[in-house]
Amino acid sequence: MDVLRRNNVTLSGQGSRTMVFAHGYGCDLTAWRAVAPAFMNDWRVVLLDHVGFGGSDISAFDPERYDSLGAYADDLLEVLEALELNDAVFVGHSMAANVGMLAAIAQPSRFASLVMVCPSPCFVDDADYTGGFSREDVDDLLEVLDANFLGWSRSMAPVIMGNQDRPELGTTLESSFCRTDPDIARAAARVVFLADHRAEVPRCPARSLVLQTSSDALAPVAVGEWMHQHLPHAEYQLMNATGHCPHMSAPEETIAAIRRFVA
Amino acid sequence: MDVLRRNNVTLSGQGSRTMVFAHGYGCDLTAWRAVAPAFMNDWRVVLLDHVGFGGSDISAFDPERYDSLGAYADDLLEVLEALELNDAVFVGHSMAANVGMLAAIAQPSRFASLVMVCPSPCFVDDADYTGGFSREDVDDLLEVLDANFLGWSRSMAPVIMGNQDRPELGTTLESSFCRTDPDIARAAARVVFLADHRAEVPRCPARSLVLQTSSDALAPVAVGEWMHQHLPHAEYQLMNATGHCPHMSAPEETIAAIRRFVA
Image 1 (cartoon, each protein chain N blue to C red):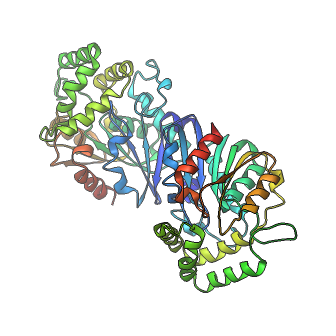
Image 2 (image 1 turned 180 degrees about the vertical axis):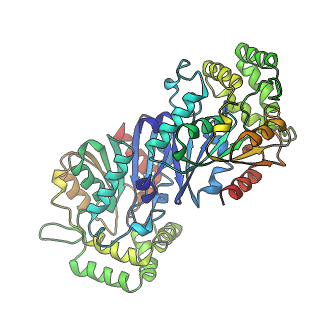
Image 3 (image 1 turned 135 degrees about the vertical axis):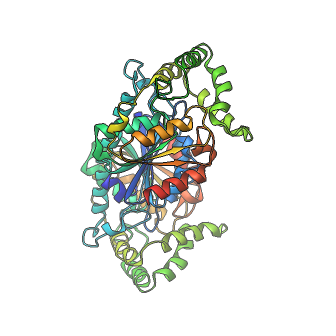
């Protein structure tokens, strides 16, 4: 129960199979509110918040422990262990796609498959690899975020969400960012935006679905294609959806893609 | 996870304390939909379905196993063990009040306290004990239920619910009855309506709240008073609410009573 409380685990739905949803940076389990209920008639649904976000135990956030995405993967594995859960379908958005991949490498039997929503193994360009940002770009982003987290949230949320013809989507994401403790947001941003998990991608044992949107300010199409090429067992879908949060902006297309993958 | 799936356990809410809700005969966890959310900001909330009802694993229902309420209590303890849960507040309606009591006698440390909503340790009158029904009454009820479960549901749901000025409440209960597998409904009815747990009541180790309504076709006021007198650590509240399902017909009064008790 302590682990479940720490990660604000919620359990719902019915079925013999289980789908686990994990959110991206600055979000929480409510990010799945338009997607997860679609599976509750046929699946057990587990939602969780990473430590430091949403309804997690904020006091459990220690920047020394959470100095890499591996710590979040360890937490995920503890949740799956507490639930005695194997062969789960894990749906992770953005940072959580890496978290799920690291967890699946550590304990393959926990995962039947991974759905990676807008994954990026590394935001920084490097030789032949296109992450979408120079190191200078990322340093600038982190500097602004450090100096003024609320200002960063206000300006970046609409860019990350895209879909600027529906500004309420950006506002929802901005509100989610702003609910985050600024100190935690700063520490976690450094981990998320400087992570480089390209070396682990070819070792991912799980069948995977890469959901790449047509236009994503954080993960350009080249990144989704790179994931597809380097994951050993990946399917790739270039979505009609745009923006970095298709589970929020295009839930129907996201649901349909997951359904087809797990059918 | 198998136990959690078997009992369709749902987990939600946030907080350091946990409240567990269990439904009465022919109902399921949706019976708590007007009460449980009131606690989700301050409590972890566990909802479950007894085996044979709602979204539980119907295939796990074996009439030989579920030949007494003790089997449901064993299931409850397995759920609490799976969640590593101690010191829970358990809220049980009708049959589930007995289930919680039996579980608390078996493993006291799992329970901080019990809220018994319309409990009855025994429906059949016996010497000085007023249960509300003669044995012949109960036999008649079971005979009608055996012969025509849907007919029984249609005629009994409004009587059990009371509040006939709000017929939609009776319809909701009838619908809940009708979702139950008729064979299971028949087998479980025999166990529920012929149960006699008067001998266990004085052995209940947990602090308890008896919620008795002013008019209850299944548990007359004398039964609530009997519970109050024989439970070692009981508080008693005669509610303004009427009918056997105040959590459905008078959720605000039910919430307020639980809040005061756990404050």
